[in-house]
Each structure stands twice: as C-alpha cells, then as structure tokens.
Image (cartoon, rainbow, N blue to C red; front, side, top):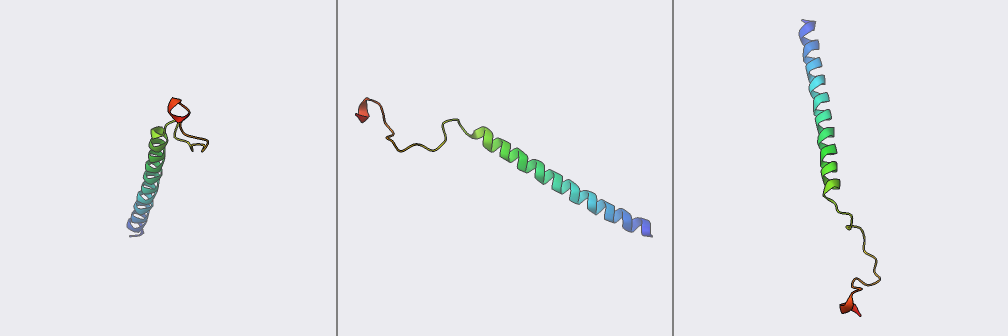
Length: 57
C-alpha cells in the first residue's frame, strides 16, 4: 500500500513543478511582450521646451 501513497505524492510534486514552470514561462512571455511594445522615443521628456519648431519661437 505504500506504493500508492508514494505515487500520489510524486504526482502532486510533478503537478506543482509543472505549475511553477508554467507560471515562470507565462511571466517571461508577458515581460517580453511588454518590452516589445515599447518604442524608442518613450523615455522621459526633458523640460527645456517641447516645441522647437517655427510655432514655438
């Protein structure tokens, strides 16, 4: 009967490991998608005047 209890424990451990791996992969995927959605020009703007064109003079 000890065989069935160890099988159940092993199954629970495997399921827990799979859940952790899946969560880690989902997090990495979400971070990669977030980084891919950003643009080069999305940084902070300096406050030296936004419009340097003819209208701003």
